[in-house]
Length: 129
Image (cartoon, rainbow, N blue to C red):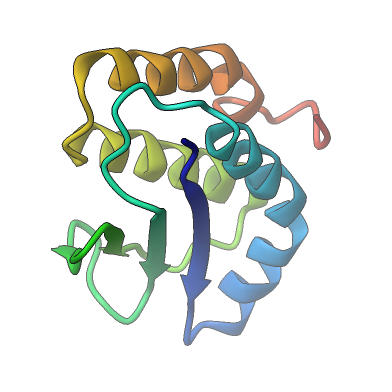
């Protein structure tokens, strides 16, 4: 079984929204890869991560129930696309560590994050994938 995985922004800062739109294809690529992982021990149907500038940086709220995992994460308004891409990658990676997957399923996701980390971290010279 696979899980549907998504990350979105709930922003009041217009520049943050614009920056997110510029990197959306990269984020969507990563969430598609994560969604394609075949889980050995499925725990639910969906993971939704919502990064928002309406809460302070460091804010974390787990709003999960009935196999629907949803997380609200506070971020500061970031306008630099490379920094935003890196920040959102790290948010996803850290959030996945908090989800109660079995060890084999955690390892699958860790491999994806490890393989694609260079595309998201310190990606100042390459805007595409």
